[in-house]
Length: 469
Image (tube, rainbow, N blue to C red):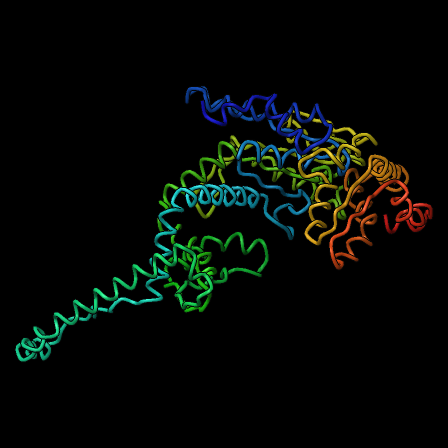
């Protein structure tokens, strides 16, 4: 059984629980959607063609975990993932990104993911080639001329044959000395004795894309031409001086890329994007027109109509070749505070049959978000300050007080979900972060009284808290 086949819906939810607090229903629905993709790949080819993914529409206010659920889902499945905002796209004829660019970004992400995996497979061989290049830079081999001998050179060979015989033994001895020196340096290199030694190496210069800075639409059209000209034109090389430790980092990806089968890389990248790719379209509610036909809303319904063929299934041309969007999983999300899902055009609504409604976060959710996830906010600050010799301890009442303040601010000012916690915690630790590092190590206990000391004045003033918190 493959690793991906072991991802049952329950296991997927367990993995999501490590990073996302609450939202059980939403996690359950995305887990089922992911499992159905795995089930589809196990079907016979004739049946598999007819099974299309059920796209998901997430509905919930900002900061409740919509983006994080989609991002972590892709991470669990090791799937190519792209996040885009619907507001960055415009109807054809207006200034803005073309909707097809999201598919191109997904393919780029997929190819880079496969490339990273393939480079990891050849890492050992690449490291040996890098060592050979470094040793060659330290002790260059005798360069042999590749030019064809002239007629006069051939005539002179008769006169020089005696001299050649005498020097041959010397040349062979010199070659042996160079080889022995190289072997000695290679051993020292592998033992890490030469890392700070400076060498001069030849590397290819990174060329600037031909259509960069000329606008998104021209860049999209010109991407194929840019790639073509880069392949035709000879690549410029530049000699750079650097330490051996730095040279390893520069040369290893270059040598790894030479060992990769490029055709296999592109084929696998496109296949993975088509069958496992996830595109997350955020702010989908911002392109609802609500019946307005002029002014700033003029192109919103047009964006939805441009999105429709991509979500339904079409073929998009990319720099790696054509890609079908039939089996890409689309997850759309929006707060829908002013609009409703029914304000989307009917055709697009039908392409997002699964509706996942995310609930607002409670005070208890805030307490758990601060402490429980693997990437919990308080853990991050503890690790950061520990690098400066400051040990922070958060007491239970201190955590509860920060959660209370964040929850109340969301109620009274503006509900921005878990993002409010970052503002509160940052303000509480502002003075500590500024004072560190101090002479010697020190400890600090953050309890409710300390939280009130740091936030009391700001939190109590209605005008101040709207600007600062």
